[in-house]
Length: 232
Image 1: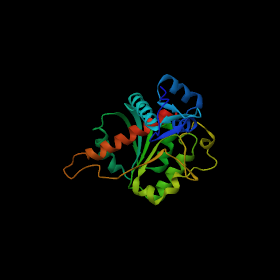
Image 2 (image 1 turned 90 degrees about the vertical axis):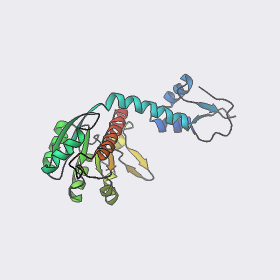
Image 3 (image 1 turned 45 degrees about the vertical axis):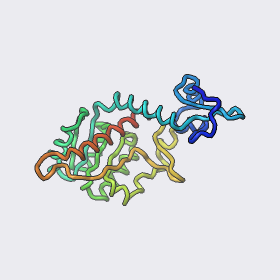
């Protein structure tokens, strides 16, 4: 759908900018305008301008559909500080609406091996693991050919103290892949597959699972799954 006489739009992008925003080709954006998926107008010079609100609505519709297809079931690998945390984390995931195939380990070497052999949909790293070990884990997982496309969840405080784990190394094949989910922030390339969560208790004082923390974690995982499916 095209709006030819719209003046002074509050927020809009050019066709090329819209293509980058949606990570599609110029031709695809033009077809979306012609079929009415995107709202656009033309300047006096004949240049097409697409409303940002229309782009955002399209992404929301796509994300909803992707979540319905990809978020119902997933394989989660949880790397914990100690085996004593297994029961608490499992109790947390049992409250989730999603069907989760949960694997847990308290050994870093085993975690790396399972990451390759299981090819989990998402990897969760416990906040109690030492920062040095977390840096090692995230670095390996981000570099390895078999695991670099897997979303990794790390604790928010750790990510703020060690932002270097978001840096994309030059040897990454992903940097050369136009379909890659790697994004550019300023002058540095950042890896959006590494996501942060705010740490909290797994089990409350009364012995029940921390439902609120579990809900936040589940929503974050579903969002990771949606973005992963989008990039596929």
